Length: 572
Image (cartoon, rainbow, N blue to C red):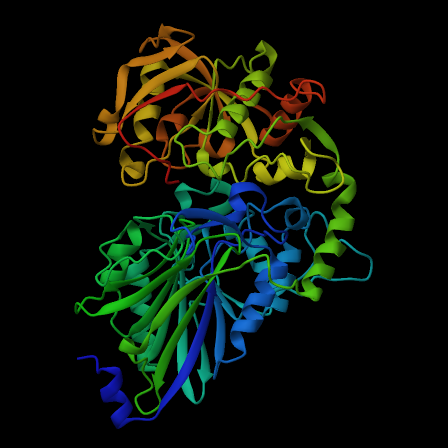
């Protein structure tokens, strides 16, 4: 039986410990632009929901440093995806700037996320241990990358040949004489959402089985205070950052719920990520006792403060004492001078590339920040891919599909630098599509195209649908009142007004990740006659240049390609 805080206080001497947590930072050193850089909250004056500008490493550093001041002891943790899918200021230098920023920030330990594997395990190990990039080398004469001072944890990521974790499974430190262990894991499904090359030679184990295994190992070593850092998450019933999930976690769904219910009760708190949502909930452990489960959205817009007590006699976390709350990283805070200097340094190095103008937009074109199943920017990207790959010598594409998770930002009308309002720079386009995946065109039958649409809402994607963004001329209806594959109204699927013929062949374009079956789309992998084209970013840049000018900015599609029946919001 877990003792109450009052009972424990009577019997033992307690020590206060503060955990400060972030997740899914994705190299967003500069304040994220557009709706991707806001947090939804309730205005106390009006009672209405408002979008508050938030995030940016200059403000996050100040917020965390101020939060640490009153703490008896404080440890800063993260739940993965600190790097990967990053804006150009970080990505151009293989995310070394973000590692440097996290060291300055005082990050102590993080789990690996799926995006830590975007460039493969060897690159992840380089970020941890240091050294110049094997291809691009060192970026400045006489300066060698030192690697991360914080600890990357990968309990459930093992080498296929040796069976051993590629990084430490846990990290143990002391707080006021009490040993506290942190176990880090990423989602078991990482191979489904990362390129095959990125996870080559690796095995991703079950989260619950692995974490419980190492919790038992820690307890044998006399470490009885344990925190789990898991790059997997949930979906709260409200997008307001401080929504109350309820005492038993009824207001949250998703994979983390089942995981949390099965983790060893010795684990005093669970810090999560991956879904980019904000929550500070309690979910019952296997004994039915409520336990804190948190996530701080993404991009450094929030941080989670977890206050708890350690029993100095038993060495355990006093579970009823755990209090967790998310805080907005408001841009009214003073900027941290060391972070301002870091951004200025790398921005100057990146400027010749980042500032190059590509095209013009008439207003914000929402992508990542859009909650619609069909996103304005998704339509633009799919059209760019079709335009670039439709010529016979480029693949003869008739349809293009874009995975929604690959759209990392919005195109924002307001100037980010000196380029002027409405100008899209290379840096801004890169922030939208930072993976620079090579494009592929494959032949699929009409039946396989329909299977592809059904896989958006069934199989691996049934619980969390991934609605592909499709090019102009391809239309269909989704009936969200139904379940699974039945949500796709088969006889509504048309290309240029003509019904898709199940027996006919169609040339379909997608980035290499999606075309390889990633994100739970095996129908893509079954395609034949593959032709490899230019990168998705190159096609996007070329399309902006060919279809916009200062006098005639880009014509944004009307979001009329997918007809939605019933409720539906994208939850990728």
